[in-house]
Amino acid sequence: MLTLDLPGFPKLRSGKVREVFELPGDPDHLLFVATDRLSAFDVVMRDPIPDKGRVLTRLSAWWFERLRTEGVENHFVTVDVVTRFPALEPFAKELAGRAMIVERTEPLPVECVARGWLAGGGWKDYQETGFVSGVELPAGLRLAQKLREPIFTPARKAEQGHDENISFELAAETIGRPEISLMRDATLAVYGRAADLAAERGILIADTKFEFGRRADGKLILIDEVLTPDSSRFWPMDQHQVGSSPPSFDKQFVRDWLETQDWDKTPPAPPLPADVIDGTRARYVEAYERLTGLKFAAH
Image 1: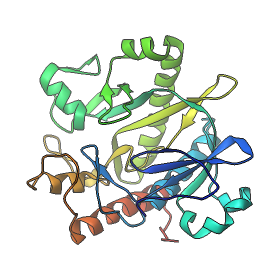
Image 2 (image 1 turned 60 degrees about the horizontal axis):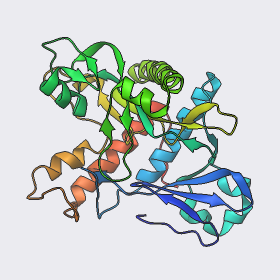
Image 3 (image 1 turned 120 degrees about the vertical axis):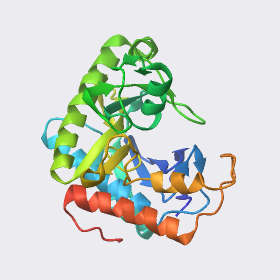
């Protein structure tokens, strides 16, 4: 599934992966649908990754439910969308496993990134400046090295293109110091809990991003997706080695293949070969199964 329209349900927005629909007659909730789209280098690939949207939805729901039992409020309501909103029955097949009903909030324009290991854009920034989003790190760190303690590195969300890493101070100017302070503390707390659980199951969460929304009463809660292969860098613990980029349970497999192609990283992207599609799907499914302990079923 690359695109989705639900006649009678206004589409509020369409992101790189998710479609967000209004629920007529229910202004307090929204329908989130995760497609099988995959973006790399800020370009949406022309080929879907089968079941990717179902993995993202089910893994997010698993984390949201687990976090709520630990006192972390979030926007998740249910994945049983047809029972909750019977008017969706005509679309039950398209929505199966990839949709959730969530609480409607006002999204804040700053993403919250927690980093426990040095990788990706953080590694690039560190090499150039010795800082990551305004956080100074010790000299001499290597790629994929564990940090002494996790750091909070906010990013300003972009409507188009890549999000911009910003300092804590700039984030405070953008949304307010009390808000970003609360988001920082929640981000590091949730990351710490998730990293401990993942480590028990043989996965290192090198970094992950969270988004927050404001309820009508002003309270900030977790929204969007949480701790999925799209929002996180998952490494197999037994293959981690400081100084080299470990294999990961995410779209890095696609990025690595794209780097070998004669492509300028502007649309359209080259078609993905079957082995890259299958390999990417397998990595997403393995992340779900290892983290949750559940067997992934396509339907």
